[in-house]
Length: 86
Ligand SMILES: [Zn+2]
Image (cartoon, rainbow, N blue to C red; front, side, top):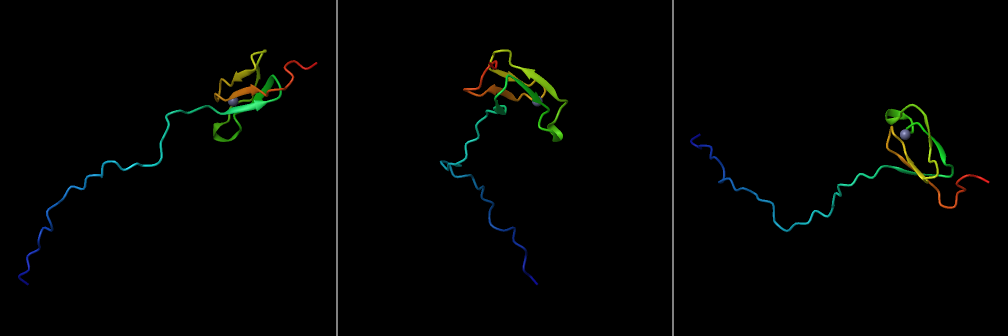
């Protein structure tokens, strides 16, 4: 009895120490998935799962790469692969 609760020590704002390096640098780039294929015509269904989409066939038509309009995957023709067969 008789002890009055003290409000505690004066509140000190704990500022973060300047100069601390976090170590992890988050780069704001989100490169789409790149898939190397050996054929100019590829089929993509998004890989199935929640990110899947109806299966579509994509033709690079000599460009050497094609982006899937559904999932933005980029398919590139593997270096050394025959572009148009023989
Ligand atoms: Zn796709």
